[in-house]
Structures are given as C-alpha cells and as structure tokens.
Length: 144
Image 1 (spheres, rainbow, N blue to C red):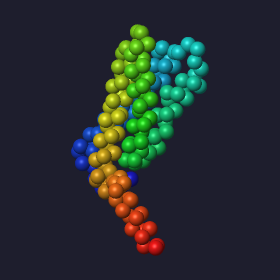
Image 2 (image 1 turned 90 degrees about the vertical axis):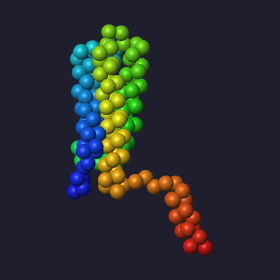
Image 3 (image 1 turned 30 degrees about the vertical axis):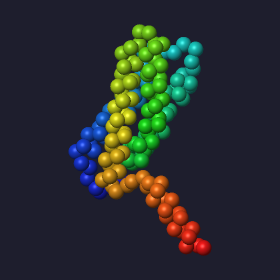
Image 4 (image 1 turned 180 degrees about the horizontal axis):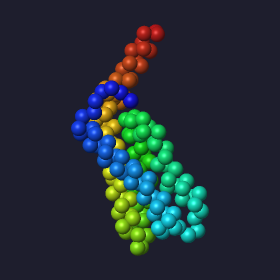
C-alpha cells in the first residue's frame, strides 16, 4: 500500500490479526462441515453464515489496507457470538469452541491495534466531530 516501513509493533499486531483471520477461515468449514456436520442445515447455509463473512475483508487484508482491518472487527463479532453461544449448547465440542474464541480474539485484538498503529504511521486519522462541525460552520458563514 505504501512505502512507509512498518514498526515492529505494527508487524506484531498484523501477525496476530492474520493468525486469527486464517485460523477462523480454516476452523469454521473444517469444524462445521466435516468434523461435526450440522444436521438439518444445508451446506449453503453453513457456508453463507460462517465462511462468506470472512471472505468480505479478504481483498483489503491482502492489499494491506488499515481501514479494512478496522471494519473487519464488525465481522469478527459474529464469531464471538457463535462461540459464546456454542459454549452453552454444543456439548462435546468444547475444543472447537475454544479455538473459535481464541482465533476471534486474536483477530479482534490484532485488527484493532494494527489499524491504529498502521494508520498512525501513514498519517491517517478519523476526524473529530468538533473539527468537522467547525469547518462546516465556517463554510456556511462564508456563504452568507
């Protein structure tokens, strides 16, 4: 994406994010389609609900876009919800549930801090609402 070199901490969080992302991308189909198939659910439903969401940020992650890492956290919430729900209902699948929660945690923490540190390195920032309102007010007053 840019020529600006990543600091060690930025690289570390990117590796953590990728561990979680790739871990979920491998775990979910293996667990839900092959090791413990879900009776009563079609393969399309399982793929659509548990695998397709992980494919949405794939392009941005490959292109190393900090913004993609940031919004990928909205997707990882699905896996937290599934994991915590499965703790109560999926008897005999504790290892898979704990793996899902581990990978989701890695992805969440890694994506959060990678987006933060890489964004700082690249000079990206989210503008504060106060600054934006002041600019809009100034622009409006100039028109009068």
